Length: 288
Image (cartoon, rainbow, N blue to C red; front, side, top):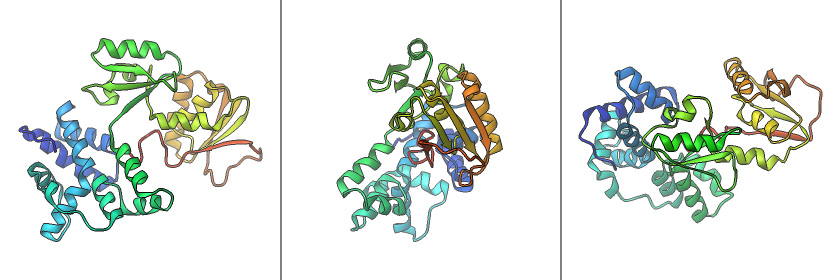
């Protein structure tokens, strides 16, 4: 729980919850849409407040339902969160229900993962996903990115496993407001997204990248040694975004963008290496 005295911070949280419920969108998109709708500027306090609220959403909602017998509305959820009373509500006896509520992940996901992981590992994995970590991808100049971040008061370091990944250790800003991101020198990408590419070991191979937009992994594949990438996505808008990104990394001539449904690829070529990352591990679909 992060108590605040600023009414505008609460207003942002309430509006963002409404947007998430209405459009089923990510926390970060909802945050900036809420700011836009309210005519406010981004700030660390409002973002941290909303982030912690969302990470505790299931627990707050569970406490409200136990008391009122119905789901809470956004304003009511914020009030219960602010009061801290949700912390004293006993958890259900079912271990899987408890894990779902305490980690704010849907029960169906917890149930599905429990078929492959023991309870202790399952809980550790879901809690790890809730820890806020910011990663930046810079395939060309990671050292310069760290220098830029340091100059604007951001604590950052190059990852010990992947020398093109930068971990932002401490910052007051959302990723999109960081200097290297605004200048196009770095892209917010989760480390897991990079590990997907590394695990494929596609150096010297042609690769099929299904559901490829916005093109980050296709770019990485070429820069990590793949000879050609056939990048398929069914979204015309996201294909256009991918084209811009490929140009930025100067790999457009070795990536063929195809607007199509990957379930029925309009190509006859067979591939020894294929990448299918659905939902995208790099845009925080689960963790966000």
